[in-house]
Amino acid sequence: MVINTKEISARIKFGIMLSALLYAGILVASIVFKWSEKHIFEIVLTAVFISSIAFTYAKKYSYIFYNSDGPKIIIRYTSLQPMSAGNFSIEVPKRDFVKAEIKNSLGGFRKDLIVYVKTPQGVAKFNPVSLSTLSKEDIEAIRQDLSIN
Image 1: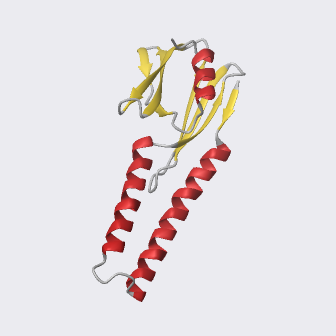
Image 2: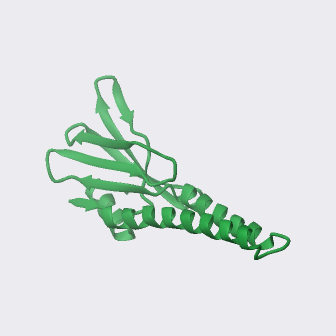
């Protein structure tokens, strides 16, 4: 099974960048053309922008590529949050796979996938991968593919 969130991830990243540019442009235009004497418009605009960025950070959106067709389970992910960098990959041979679990974070606001793998030192736990960009059908498909209850 292959899941690739390239399209939705590109839309999310474009939306984040576009909203930042629009915010900066409207804020500068408002100050230059003095649209508001007491700067109420700028304060409200800033509050809306900060809350949208806080929502993005809380959801922890990421680009996800999941492939379990070959001898390995491959999960590649990249954070879509502003000011974050790094491409991460989890490649697990199916014979070393122990279990996976999906945990709800922030009261069910975000779902995280945690993978456990058998190593010579014991069972290793990978860092959680946020599944916020996936649809319910994709999350259910991963749940069935990895036999998660």
